Length: 124
Image 1 (cartoon, one colour):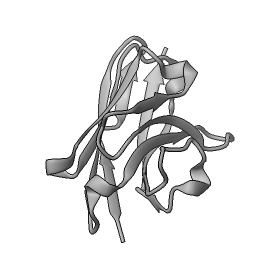
Image 2 (cartoon, helix red, strand yellow):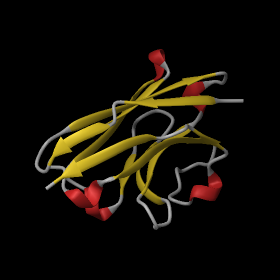
Image 3 (cartoon, one colour):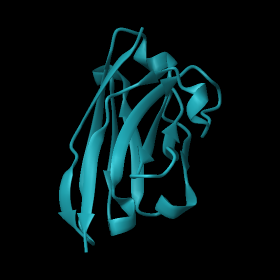
Image 4 (cartoon, helix red, strand yellow):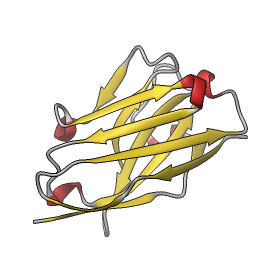
């Protein structure tokens, strides 16, 4: 059983940056693909980014390519999401998720482990 705890959310002005972190415990972190999803009020949860177990492959939804960077440190059981050039459309609760699916998928249902989420609010 994997437990995930996100941190790093907050309020930022448009054009600003934030770094989200997700700390994992209770499992073999290096065996899991990790992903970030987000959910805005009244909208479905959507895929943001994913990274393979080794960190060698990364995947992004089109709207964040070139602005967000996902990375992981297996020795620290940590995955991060660096978000630059934020805009109000990025406002959402951001969730960290873990899956043993190879390669990583953008389908929320394929991720059995989820964190509690962290709020990101971008003001215009």
